[in-house]
Image (cartoon, rainbow, N blue to C red; front, top):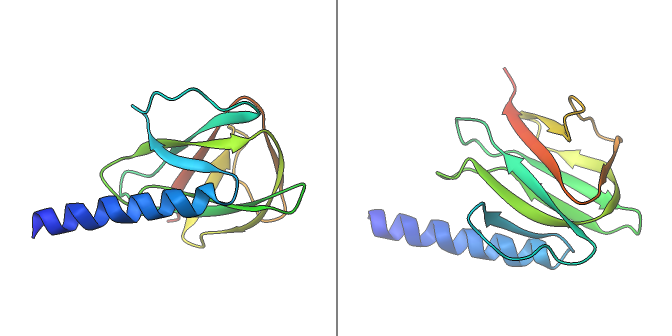
Length: 127
C-alpha cells in the first residue's frame, strides 16, 4: 500500500509538472534539482505551511498567459519553479490560504507582482 501511494504521488507530481510547463512556468522542482535557470526566467522558491495543506495561486502574465503555482501537499515543504521574468496579475488563489510574494505582505486578487531573476511565494493556512 505504501508503494502504491508513493507511486501515485510521484505520478501526480510528474503530471502537474507537465501541465504547468505547458503554460510557461517550469516546475515544481525539488530544491536538490541542479539545472541552470533558463534564459529569461527566474527561480521562484515556494514554501508551504507545516501542515502541508497546499495552497495555489493563479498568475496571469502581461501577454494573457495563465500560470498556476502550487504549494506542497507532500513531504516536501519547499520547492521551486522557473517563472518567466515579468509582471503578473493575481487572478485567483486558494480560499483556505494566505499568500505572500517576495516578502511584500499578504497578496490579494488583482495585485500585480513582479519576478526578475527570482522570487519567493509562501502559503499559510488561514486561521
